[in-house]
Image (tube, rainbow, N blue to C red; front, side, top):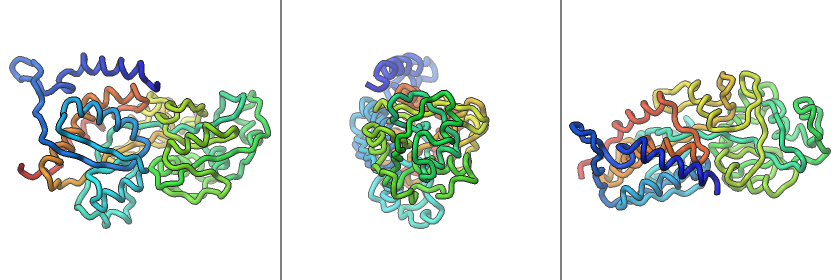
Length: 358
């Protein structure tokens, strides 16, 4: 049921406000919409990020309605697996919430790659504690919880940030990712910035969490642990947290404001992010009173030099769709669209995709 009403409204808006993008190109003389060029039969296979999975499924379905000859399959396996499968040329594209680590770039078999940012999503600090629906936490307190330095809900550090809350002595159950994860990478990057003197486990897609933590595969696995365990807390992307109906904490941002995760807060963070020449960017713990501090980027990664014309054209057409109607769809399913600056650069980068003649 997540976003069903708002998604329908978003589709109506897209159809009315963006007819050229949604249907085809415009005739330069008359301004009338024309039928888009039909792409050749092609099948694209991708894998990776579970954070972007829900967005991908919606835009893949909508794109299929326009380009019926193109089939796109996307498997939610975690960002690390997605990057590895692309590097091994098992898939045509990867979904990832983090770039390739520098040490892995030389292992990519198919030549240079391109990063295409698609949307952004807050990472929610989700929890399940009977009788508590209003909680706020700083980076230091979150770091201590995930490092098992705080083990009960009535700990003085939590009480200090929530003086009016009735905090029980319930044991804290921490839920983390078991797989190599872009969500983990961005969550731990936040901890290194927000709690530099407290957090000691490093920023990575795969972290050596305390043995007491419970591990789940992908965002949905962590969400299920939280949903079913009283006293639990974990990090889950906002879209999945919304889908399963989790409760989430307000998180203290770089300006000292406690904010709930929201697409508006993610959009505010994107406005403050510095975009690198390869279009990777870091919106985590940026300045700004409205910027949500744990905002995750996410990318489609593909080879610059395509070897199959039909697949190359299908990939480019799909990305063009994401940068048109897909941006309107994003907030209706709890994702933030790209900032104007980033979207402009992403569209321009499409020209770097080299496609052989048919």
